[in-house]
Image 1 (spheres, one colour):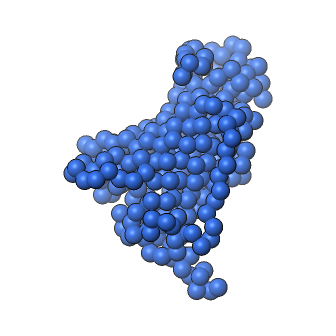
Image 2 (tube, rainbow, N blue to C red):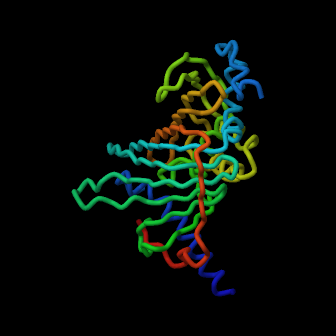
Length: 279
């Protein structure tokens, strides 16, 4: 038992380093009323706009589940790449499953296999991670160990974490009515304070957001554009982060609310406990 714990401790530390390298590998660098739709009256007023945005995470929890598509545009050292993901998410259980596709090797190498990611309110599981991990094994990362709280590192922003960031929304303005994937939405723009977001976040997300607020990003605020439907649910969310030497724009699209979601976490014997190679 003691030996197993030591292996797990070494693996956890190594995995955190390897996960942070995922972004580096992709970029090639080295280094109440408004939320349920009934409070949408007078959306142009700052108070109403801010309330609608700050409560949007609650509206997602009430919705239960959704399908999601994500994209993460990263710019660093003159290089710009996009990482794309698609999957499903259960906002009540704070669990999701995504397939994340990294860009093709600029040198013309073979296409990279999609990375399967499981998000579990405080933990991130990754399969096909590479870096010396056997193909049939998962790596497990505590999101508190990630400086960005898994808003950037995994290549696919956790949809609930992204919405929880909006709890710190300030300077919110109502842009106007638009359509996203055929759905009428209200477009809001503002800046989210990460420390305020962490204080108001749910228990499953609070720890990771506290880390992100404390040391994850070069700036303690996150500019955003969010599009809410008549029930106050996020349909599209674009956030901008500055981390290390990269500027990152994360976009999340949510649709098909209420879809069945079943996320089974890996068994203990399927989790890699060895050394993760440097990316």
